[in-house]
Amino acid sequence: MTNESLSDFPLALEGDNMPMVSFRKVTKRYGDLVVLDSLDLDVAEGEMVTIIGPSGSGKTTVLRMLMTLETINDGVIYVDGKPLTHMPQGDRLVPASNRHLRQMRSNIGMCFQHFNLFPHMTALENCMEGPVHVLGLSKKEARERSEELLEMVGMADKRNQHPSRLSGGQQQRVAIARALAMRPKVMLFDEVTSALDPEVIGEVTNVIRRLVTEHNLTMLMVTHQMGFAKDISDRVCFFYGGRIEEQGTPDELFGNPQKERTQQFLSAVKEAT
Amino acid sequence: MSYFEFLSQYGDRLASGTLITMLLTVLSALLAIAIALAMGLMRLAPNALIRGIATVYIEIFRGTSLLVQLYWIFFVLPLFGITLEKFTAGFVAVGMNLGAYGAELVRGAILSVPRGQWEAALALNMSPAKRMLRVILPQALLIMLPPWGNLMIELLKGTALVALIAVADLMFQAKQINGSTFLSAQTFGTALIVYYILARFMITPFMRWLERFMTRKLGRA
Image 1: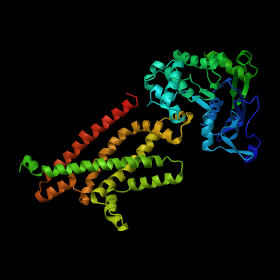
Image 2: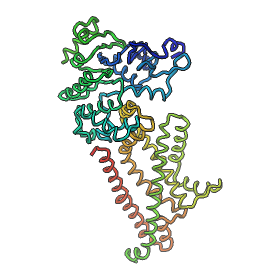
Image 3: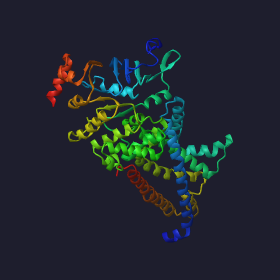
Image 4: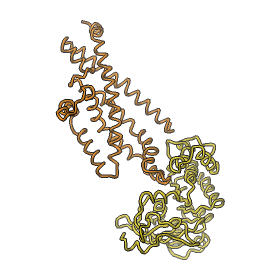
């Protein structure tokens, strides 16, 4: 990206209606393949936004970029008003230093499709790892915080089990507790129920549902569970070909989709279930 | 002379040689592990210079003969002002050589830890050093233990070469006894058996135990 095009972007976002997350003309390419095409997306503080769409539409890439697991080719992402993978230098933005990245990353937590719990640590140790070794909390504080969260996700009685002894649903609940233990402002859920057996999906969605109703977290979720998305989202974005084809409240998008591609996708999903 | 007479007469010397061999094995193993960890990690460094140093080290010590390396360390280094006592030269040569093989085991094991583990550690905002030390290495350790067992047996057998610079190990004692008695079958037969026993009944069970211990520690039992 040229410095000239970066000068089009503000150094920081301010104001009363400042979004918690803001994608500004963000493009992601793998060689010739354009995964995200000049994406604009704002997520307000406390908002729950669900991303749906066919595979290859760039849904997961949105979350992975926010977690800084992917670089971006063009555009700027702002989190809590500050540029995520850029930093201000003088009157323009330059690629962020590792220090800036680590500072920004502390705002964001993520849960993965395959849980990615650390297999050599118990459920409790998984949750305490970040608070102790990243945030610098004392073991006692970290334990209290972690036990509270494991309690919330209904995993307190399994706290001393290693992940290999837990079912998929249980592992995912621990993974949610582990991410929350870092007290992020933004939580990302990347197809967190896709690798689960149907009968345990409910225990994970119930935890997320509780988060939505009881906490003022900003959340972005990629899912194939249309019913769940409809239930808990403030807004649903339908991705197609690296762009937002259509977005709206769940009632609007699921009840009365305007675009042909959205209608096709939703009816195809309906047929499959 | 019966074999028992042979053993009662020369058993002491063979036993002291065996002790030296065991000591050499332990010391070169420790050196090999340290070098393997350092070089294996350096091979994965983002910095090209650091990667280059490790690559050159591994190429040299893996690509040339252990015996030649031993002679270099013992006979050639003194010409550059570095004189090592022969016992030291012995375990340093073996350790540096096997460390080069071990470095590739370390690198391979680190790379075979699932990508999701790196990503989860990054998502927790762990520093690169913490990611490696607290998340990746413990898992890589378990992956690389079985091939390390192999390498340890190689290392034990490799120590026999130090007899050629007159370190009084098992092989050296066997050669000496053979030179004065010409009881080749008895001396080298005994040496053969002792090496086998060390490998089969000490190193292998120890590595198996270590595997079980680590498996349990990592909660995979």
